[in-house]
Amino acid sequence: MSERVFLSPPWMGGNEREMVEAAFASNYIAPCGPMVDAFEEAFAQSVALPHACALSSCSAALDLLFHELNIQKGDRVFCSDLTFVASVASAVRRGAEPVFIDCDKTSWTMDPDLLGEALADARRDNRLPKAVIAVDLYGQCCDYGRIENLCAEHGVPLIIDAAEAVGATYKGRPAGNAGLAAVYSFNGNKIITTSGGGMLASRDASLVARATKRAQQSREPKVWYEHEELGYNYRMSNILAAIGIAQLRMLPEIVRRKRQIFARYGERLRDHPEIRFMPEASYGEPTRWLTVAQIEAHDPNLLIQTLEGANIESRPIWKPMHLQPVFRGARVYGGAIGERLFKTGLCLPSGAGLSTFDIDRICAILKDCLR
Ligand SMILES: *Cc1c(COP(=O)(O)O)cnc(C)c1O
Image (cartoon, rainbow, N blue to C red; front, side, top):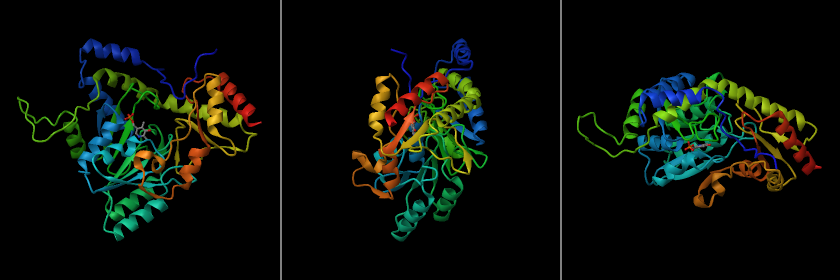
């Protein structure tokens, strides 16, 4: 049997090893050091935000932001319905009530019309959310302009969950360059990886400084260990930051490859009108972190099983949050579009190192199933 084709494996195409060697040579084998500083600086520059803090995960970055916003029992947060649970998990763990906002058909990201409706209702009930978490899905930015305006109009802080969209743009602005702050993921399957890791970035220097302090157990600047509040141990390791620096340099090449992979799938499956790929919103350039398609009149689970039989990993689209047992009873605005995408959607192998041979093999299997 041929080697397993993974959905989105890491692609170490740069000088990751040399950077890790250099980190070893410096003996900063710790959650601080010159690589962490350099990675933060380079990343901040790449997303055109002045301040960034490297963390152990994107989930940690979100946790720090929810702490910053003092989200607690009785508060509400509005979040994209079609996402990974981490977007909202830590806010709910703090006691907040989540309200989910469906996506729109043209971008598969948060529908600004529904967000407007939800905010207007909330204002009428005098229960505005403490935060809106808008998610950049599968490498495509949500409509920053419209979502920012709505949040500003109601005075609600906006967090961009750009975990899946490193390298994407919105009207020329890099992913996450909107709202109060943005979070990014460098998990093993994301577009660039440090094995596990995340970043918090913002225009607000004091916000990032507070988050950085909390990520280090809220230690006060004293010779002894002094604490005025409780924090976390969330900083990124210097070794992993070394990988991150090298990966970030490769980002343009990885995006180019991902978009090429998407184009090849499109070409090969052109004569199957029942396959509709995730649309590209007119306002930006997505990375195609994953090639995602909607296949009407076919059960994606059967396709997934068939691909699995050939040792190929594929996956359904995210299951909408309002359908998750853990959020049973939560309020949702819309919901039908995300449900439909979940029922009909398929994420195809999209690793930056995926060969045309494998893409063609995958397409041949799909065509066979669809016949
Ligand atoms: C992967 C992901 C996260 C979590 O990232 P971690 O680094 O694994 O904590 C959060 N939000 C979205 C949308 C994601 O896809």
